Length: 183
Length: 183
DNA sequence: CCCGAATGAGACGTTCACGTCTCATTCAAT
DNA sequence: ATTGAATGAGACGTGAACGTCTCATTCGGG
Image: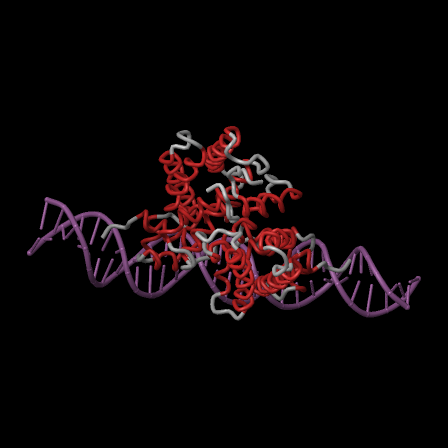
């Protein structure tokens, strides 16, 4: 059967996110293929990482598109974003935690653009008066990545049900831990 | 001059959190010592990682103690915890993101205990009625680590001022992004 | 001032994962 | 059934980082 490139990248991201030194052999086995085949599809470890970056950035960009951040109120956009980005969370977690990889790389540009779109969403919410202004849009962007990564990991470890993930992330981000009267 | 063990560990954590494959030589240089001296103080790379785990767990345990999680309401405890844990955030970020290191390790026990203390705090808040119950205490614990790590990273990258970090983390966790009427 | 301890610089051998290659086997399409 | 492509299993050489060691130098206490 032909190798499912998408599947390989997903498995690789899940492993690499939590142990950047994961062996090529382990990645191959996790993806259900042999090390030889892994090398046939990705020229080497570096090429695999690059593919991971490209793949993650592209999928996340599509998720942002699908979330239609400009429509409706900012909170709704954020909820849609969480839902759309959830399948990419594992890859994003890897790129986010290990993103010193980009140093002096052109890939950086693509990443910065995605950051900018997120930041714009938060800024819009602040300007519309629905998001608090004592937390900077930059920080909210970072927090988004952090929570998404933590969520992906929690699901992977079985501490959170995958079905609850969207709700757990979006609600914590929007409403916080404290019980609120206005809901 | 004598080697400042604490300083070496802090620098090592900062580098390793971003790139787990950081060379021993780079760690040594970042700490301002030679590779030879680094090896004189830590038997090897593994020993350095172990020391990092031990050090991080111990410092975080002290932070939890200092936060007096049992006193007052849960929200206050969480605020104090964020403040006390902030100096350890860099080390914790490394341990949290790279914590597949513990597999089948006794160190795991120490971690589990810290986790339990955090989870207990969130559960207490839920039982007292001040924390929402639609987000599990386990998830809140994971989210705490995620946000702390993201915060440490954001400060390191200059996207958030260190002075704002406590407030940024604690307020986002407690109140969320959405502007609330009840404050 | 002297002496011991600690450090820096660098050389050296070893280890281990990587990347390449070969060969047998399986799979899919015709 | 046949053929070509893709895969799995495994061997092999290479390279880079590691850990150890030596020697000169510096630092700090007596």
